[in-house]
Image (cartoon, rainbow, N blue to C red):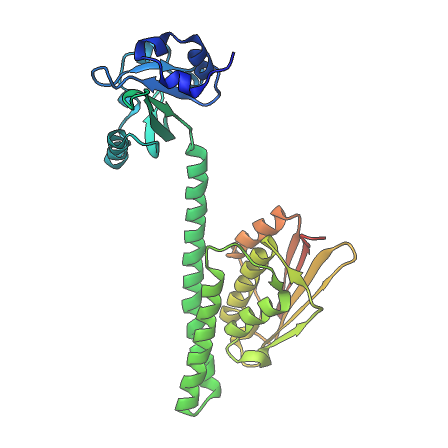
Length: 336
């Protein structure tokens, strides 16, 4: 036997409570559902399914005859309660996120959808509420936001350090004040724009590796193209490869300006790349002409990149040779 919606809404509250088909449909739904009666004082819950009990930890005897506010607790915000009140006053189907609490005191973020059930005359006879626990999704969003903030602060700190080196090294090679000013401004603008272009919330777009590498490294190199040499075929990157390589090149360039070859007038970086027959992107970063290299005692910001590379089944190796850092990267091409 099927239940037609028009048959449901034409029932009176008493007959609806006794309707076995209606009860069966709600009781066996996997979505937590409850029904309240706005015709009774304080609009108590008059029906709920097992999924509602499983979500909240309460049995029917605990909540039948009670208003659903018993799910609220210390961290339930006034704004969410007011949003529910506005939805009830409007008699429209509305979704509200609200912090609720299970019987054992554990809180969860409830994506609550509430709406009216009207009779044939348009009179409100019941109200339904469906619940969905979205705590995991919101926690994942919070962690992602925290990671983005940490990365942003890390980059901002690097920008300040790199800018100071750019100003200092440009001053060593330029004697004309006007030309010095123009070069410093141009390099700082390029550096800032490079960071702005890679710190948006948009999904990474496909692009050529050489274009990515040139944009980043020439913005960092205080003396421009004389300090960086590029060698490799045309390789189109996509998706997560753009993110991993952008972060890696940022870290390598920052380190080279502060501690390596890009911080020396005679220093240079040779960047080469190719794609193997197995479909792996192979990159070599080689520094020469900088100060004597010392192996760092603690992990640098490249740790984030190493995690990304490992998650993509790639390999990243740092060789801290005395005359210059050599970094090799093997990363599977996403479309291989």
